[in-house]
Structures are given as C-alpha cells and as structure tokens.
Image (cartoon, rainbow, N blue to C red):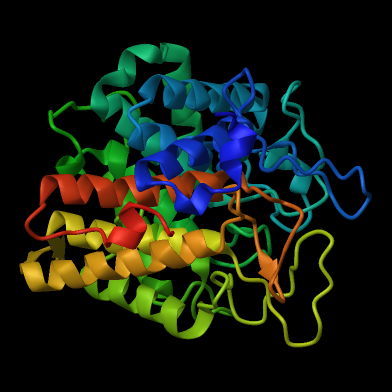
Length: 418
C-alpha cells in the first residue's frame, strides 16, 4: 500500500502505525546533513517568510523523536550539525564572552537563530537573535548524550567550543533576551530555566542522575562553578511563577517541566494550571495572553489569537512525565512521592491532551504550526510539533508497557478511530 493511499486514514490506524506515519512526515523535513527545516513552506505564494530553513532550536527539538524511537545515531548526527553551525559563528561566542554586547543595538554580534540549510550562513541579523534558551537546550542535551555513552562522538575541539558557549551564556548573565518566541528583549523564566538546566547537566552534582543508568562524570570536560548554578537558581526564582515582567504565563514555560525538570512540584502544577486555565483552546494552546502573531496567510478577526497544537503535545508530555516517575521534589529539593491514584490522574490527563492533539492533526497526520479561527496556517507540518507528537505517543506506549496494571490507553486511542 502506498503512503498516499494510507494518508487519508491516518486517524484510523493503530497507535504504533500512527507513530510510524508521523515519523515519515518528520523525516521528509530532514536534510542529508542531519538538520530539519522548520516547515516545508517555501513562500512561493508570497504570503510570508519561507520556513524551509534551519532554526537551531527547531533542529534540536525535531530530532528528539529519534531518541524516543531509539534512533540515537540520527540524534547525534543532528547535534553534530548544530556544533558545525556554532563553529561557523565561533567568533561571536568568543567576542561576547569578553565584551558583553548591547542586546538592543548590537544584534549582529549574537548567534543567529536561523541559518541557510545548506551553507549554514546567517539569513538575517535584523531581529531578535539573542535567545538564551537555544544554548541552554544545546548544553543540556549535549551533556545528556555524553552521559548516555555518546561522548566518543565528540572531539576535544567540540568540548572547547562548549566551554566558550558556557562562558557566553554566563557572561550574558541571567538577563533580558528575546526568548523562545523571538520577542523582547525581556527577562524570561523559560530562558533562565533552559540555561540553568544546561549548566546543571554539566555541574554533575546528581540532579539528573535519575536519567542515566550509569554514572559518567562529565564536569571535567566543561567545568561549571557553584556560583553559576547559584546565580541561575536565584534569577529563575525571582521570576517564577511568571514567564516575564509582562507575561504572567506562557506556553514556553512548559519547557521547565520537560525537558529540563528544573522547577519544583508546586511550580510545575502552577505552570500547567495556568496554561490549562488561561491559554488552552480547542485547536491548541495560545503562546501567551494577547499574542498577535498569526503565522503566514492567516487573517484573524479582532479578538482571535493563534492556537498551537504543539502546546497540546507539550501538555501530554509533561503530564506523562509526572505520571511516569512517581516522584518529584519540593522547593527544598526533598523527594515527594506520588501514589498510584495521583499517577493515574496525570496519565489520564496526558491521554486527554494527546487525543485533542490528534484531533487537530490533518487527515494525513500533519501537525500544523497553528490554527486561527479554525483554519490551519501555511507552516504545516511544523517539524518540532511533529516530533512532539511522536514523543507524546511513545511516552504513552512506554508507560503502559512498564506498568500495565496501572496505565491503560483507551481503545479509541490505541486502535484508532473507526
């Protein structure tokens, strides 16, 4: 049976097959060098900017699906590409590590957020490129890969570059940046948490030990001082539970729960409650209150705000993570244990948002960037949203396999809708 013939019946397929089809769509956005274009949209209709380019953040989140499917070689290849991108702009890290550039008036001094998918050269320096969460995610996942046994894939030159990135993000301080949504500059808790998560991974004092089966010390490769951790912890605490001085809550804050797990249990619950109460819609999650960005080719009427299916996947993943481990930590870093009733409650919430996510996927299984007024935008599929669908689905399968007596996927989700 051809892919095109199966595409019309995506929602009718069993969950394992839907994961496979979703991964096929994601792979179409992967380039031979290991990167992922943000979306296939090429702007030939002149309705907006082309998205078939590399956003560094999008590459790292898009390749996350490979980890959950056991394709570590492909994930490492993607991160090697990100290293190559950073190497082409190495001078920016070194220079900003010595003399702190002005965030508002020296944008050309910062690492670009997007680059050409072949040449890896900067596309533009005209807007907010200083996004600390990109480097936090890079440091976090690079450390995680090394701890999982992939350190032999990286050279001494790579570690030297990571040391310069460490210097860069610390010299820039836990200060204003343009955040995940490339808007600002303003202080963002999602950026501070990402950087703190990245530094904590290399600090190697046990916070992330639960993620790794074997204890592999990595702090000697890229040393991180206690002062860095203390300053990051204080900066993050100063903003929480808000995202920024102007935003009491934001979709980006879910990154503090997954992948970073850098905030305590009460803050996790507050973040999720704020998203569900104030940002959740039928087609997705609004990024923040009064968001005016509406994507390409969409014309919202007054009062409409774009809803991102990505947020539904993120909710499903966050609740699955709470259910899976069965323990968390409080503000004093003491362990909190959850009983099976509470864990099943979180699992059921994960299923709820996964069902809503798939309801908003196209008939052939694509995850759109956004909906405005019930209409999907041009950036369909969105690579990192497609990846998050796979992560959310595989999480549910893994949990039911590990704890079949406690976690059960409803038949309509497991077998597909009739």
